[in-house]
Length: 330
Image (tube, rainbow, N blue to C red; front, side):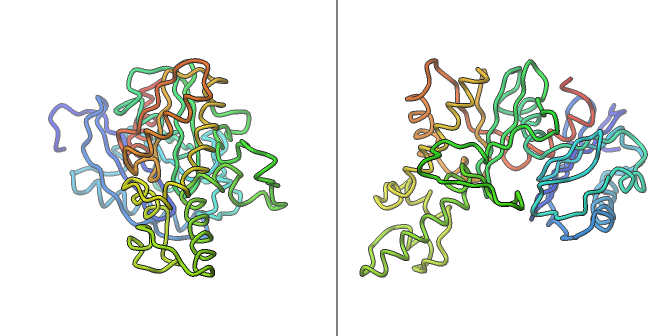
């Protein structure tokens, strides 16, 4: 082993639709390994687990360890899952049959396993090593392709009756204007993320510029950043242009920011957290975004709420999964 005195080692794995992050820690929290791999696409959990544990074994070999030597493994998934049931649902990027995946994991590892939603584990990571260290009442909201959230209440993750607590993307902040109805399939974006997520911002910007083209076009820094094509615009371009003060970008961001700020304020008055942590690619876009969210949420709040950016970035989920495997935080 590479670290003197380390007797128990844990692995945390954050499975994403496109990337998977692996973290290996000692029992005291020292990080021995942190690596990211492209997620292998599989429509069934069996082949996926074969790939996942093959990658883990290869990474562990680099620090002279084997999977069987781990004291625990935590795995986060982009969907709803409970470690007492093991069925992954509401995971569009992993459209697996509704079956218990724990026996599949047992083919490769016989020790302690902990399965959870990726945002829950990202919150644990931030509580262990990041922005929420030492806090017991924390709301985390991640704003990326979609919007998710997690809650630490009285020092413990709150998961709800069916492990589905934290589906913040389905929050309704303007029922009259959004006119949202859940599809019969119960799939797809919720009303908040349809407006305020990276996907929502992208769709709004493309529609706006497509209409502007029909009226003779308009200049914007967004188009420059996207290389001049409306179809190439995505949320990153809108956020960067807004950071630079572009008028079109600032206008396009008004409704997404207002929706998210209202959602944060609504959750905060319900939960009274010590801290709201904002994570995800959109939330990490720059100082402009955080400044606007703080100011707009403050307009709705009867008491001050501390809102801070996540500190661990895209490593939070894997770090939190390792903490969960080690039962460090409870």
